[in-house]
Length: 46
Image (cartoon, rainbow, N blue to C red; front, side, top):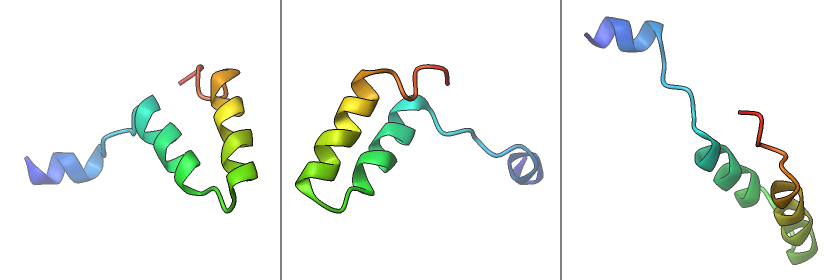
């Protein structure tokens, strides 16, 4: 079973991607811009 898990790793879900994107913000302004990107649907297609 471990072998199969290594062959087919779990794809991160939308919430995980959004959270990682927000964590990369370097300032409050950057964080606000990233929040707006998410609200506009940056990760909606996933």
